[in-house]
Length: 373
Image 1 (tube, helix red, strand yellow):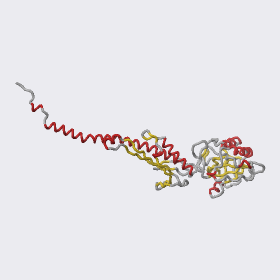
Image 2 (image 1 turned 90 degrees about the horizontal axis):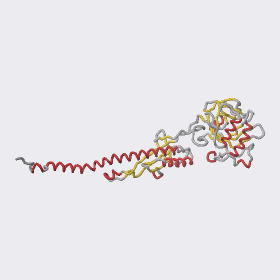
Image 3 (image 1 turned 90 degrees about the vertical axis):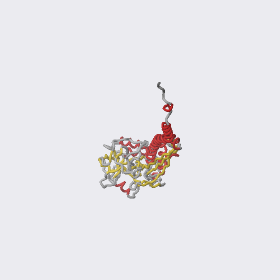
Image 4 (image 1 turned 120 degrees about the horizontal axis):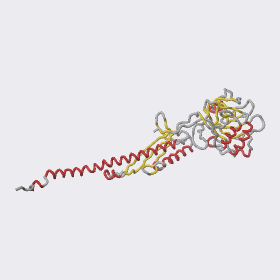
């Protein structure tokens, strides 16, 4: 007669029980490690994303700030404001980057040694360093495995505002040309305050100028736009291009300048140019009005004068040699042969296109800020 399994065969062996016990013990030890590795993968990914987002915000802040560095205290102030404003447009893990997150430091960047030296001297500052730290990025898995609930991420960037360099072109300028000898003299230590004579005699040291040809209407439109702080855009003129010169419209437009100075939206900038010069003895502006008159300012083409600084030829063309910044602040158009304007030449002005935006068009144009570290 057959029988069922014996009692001995139906009971788990001691070896089987021991093996299961070992598995259980191994699981007890391995499980925290598995959780730890999971935490490492998930939380490292979280920290990586947070660091990448913070780096983007830091780079953007440095570039935005450095673009305002211009050698003045106001420029440094604007740089700080712009850096923080742009940083706040960025998020790290869904939260805006705010001022407490960042430390701004202005200084001097040496391109040869690639070193940054902090400075508070606005005239030598050419770079902005932004250091950011984002505290307590949540790491929940690591909290379970490694008792670490949060971690910090850091980012830093240095942006340089490259030095100005001679501008090579412009699409907007005052319709007056001056000979090369005048800015050469100013650069060598001569006075930047000049009388530009615009009449029909041989003593003229300036001319009305416009690409392609000069007429009273074009000159008048350009002057009127300058009084509004705008510009009449023309075909781009570049250094080396020929520029048409003329003086036959002197009387009409000199008379108009007197009214334009009175109504101009631009004033004499004491911070940039120092005190406003005294009124010329031959000024056409009423004495009581002079202190309250504005200025006409903009790019002034410099032409090849052929070595003659005081007798520019008219109704012809001359090549442009450079571009400078001129500030017309007085006019004399009364009786007599000498008719013209009093002009201040600013050879180190960073050109800003009227109406907003920056670009070439002055003796110095500023390249865009760039990250250097």
